[in-house]
Length: 210
Image (cartoon, rainbow, N blue to C red; front, side, top):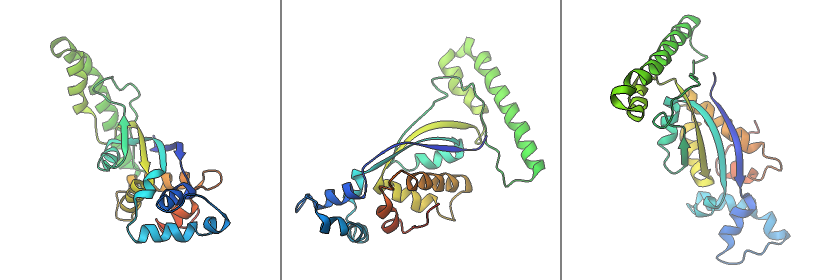
């Protein structure tokens, strides 16, 4: 199963970010101020006035391998909740297989993952009588591999999202998390009405429409 991401919702827009910055003077909008939004957003970010970007948010549901999930956890400036093998037995047994591997390596990883999942479920049951159900689920996770997939609910404010994209959409990032970051960017770009057009263009300096 490939990693996947869904946009659950968003709050704010370029205008909301601009109005937050203008609170120190006047939030009232007119045609002249609306035209000034692109330049304002560019000025704010390039001069380190980043707080207004925290007033807008993007909200995703992601299913990723554990290795990619760890990258998400490192961004504690995001808000993240994920399904937990501590509280439930993971029944789906989803796992990720890199598409850039040769066929033989993919087949070996699939066989390993299937054995890993089999041992996980066996030991949840085997350990329960002596350790109790909770500890059995906790410790049986050690049979799960880094390519096991879990689902997480992730929210960024736009300041945090910029940081995430800078680090994880980079060519230097791990392939899997880079693909996830780019997919997130695509989803935000495709919101009807493109409410973050100027934010993406001037802050992230990526004006390519995917």
